[in-house]
Length: 100
Image 1: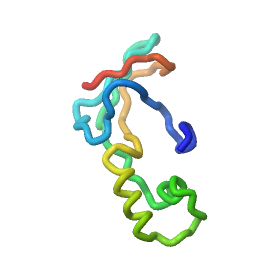
Image 2: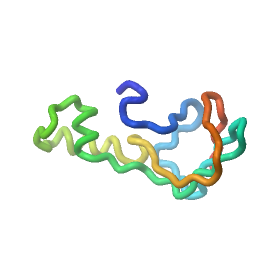
Image 3: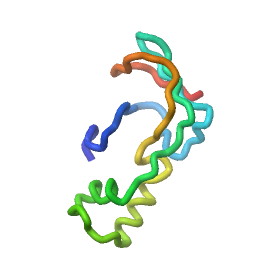
């Protein structure tokens, strides 16, 4: 998939992969404007609609074994994460992200 087509808010690159990591301690983003704390970080559970989009299937296609297997692959953080946020800042390319 091309970056940006899945409604991403913030995309991270480089460093450690977050998939499957324990993120209860949260994440911290250091920006020029200040520090943002990401709290209650949890994997975004993939849905059938998103998975069908990834597989480039027409809307309303039946859920088959390929869709079920892809749902499993996209789980545990591969699909991304959702989190609460504490602070206000603009996140820019190059800002640094830290665990907890």
